[in-house]
Image (cartoon, rainbow, N blue to C red; front, side):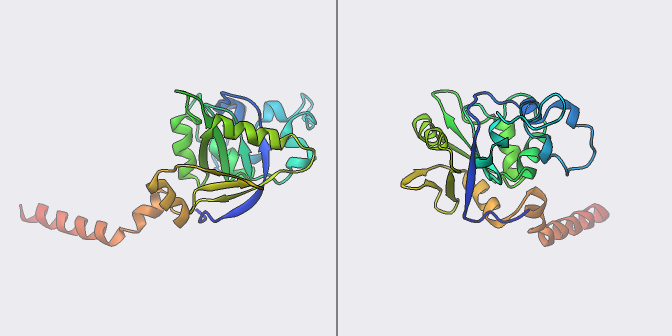
Length: 206
């Protein structure tokens, strides 16, 4: 997993709440046993016409969002089934960050989706509804909207607008170091081997 570094990227703002994992990647795309090639399937029901051509009305197909790496949605993003393919599609489309608002008791993200994102190098950022409304307002312009994401300082900057966000310290550390669960375990391989050796010795001598 690559280390998460401060970057400036183009924004793609999908103005819908409760975007579930079936919308992110419909079930017909889950047949592959590989973990690659899912980017083109992201939002496929909205992104393509019945004949497979691009739907020009969908935001991801518009010129101003080409090469986008920051995805904006509304609350409860990633709800529905627990399929990790949804995060693979988001990441393989090129998105490094997903931003959604907290609205009262409704979270920005479904828990499983958020956890899967952190395991796949995608940063989820929860902002207030007012802050996300501001971002959608900025995104209405015909020109590409860019933002700078700084995980170390926990800020997202849109020109003069700077929004701060909270992030679990353990998740932050793993993203900054580029560690998934396996990579984190490998940091302690000597301790693990020592434990196993000691455990085997105790069993032999018991």
